[in-house]
Image (tube, rainbow, N blue to C red; front, top):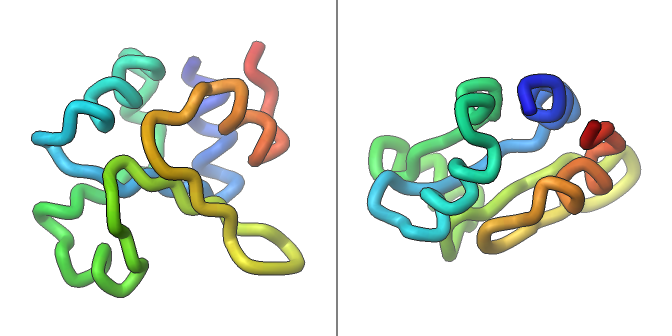
Length: 91
């Protein structure tokens, strides 16, 4: 999933999470080794940023939209949904 991870990152999608969150671990596992290519903010290490972004649960994806409010996805999100939201290809 290297190409998908790189594409959603290029699209501006960011995952906010923590190391102790089981749903974050589930999300990371969906990407496998490709998670290294995902824009990820650890809210334990970046608490102020996560407060500013109004992160209330983990993981939370924030995906910019050209003409409006960013899309927020809460919980472990299927890769197909992330691809769809960012215009990236899952294949």
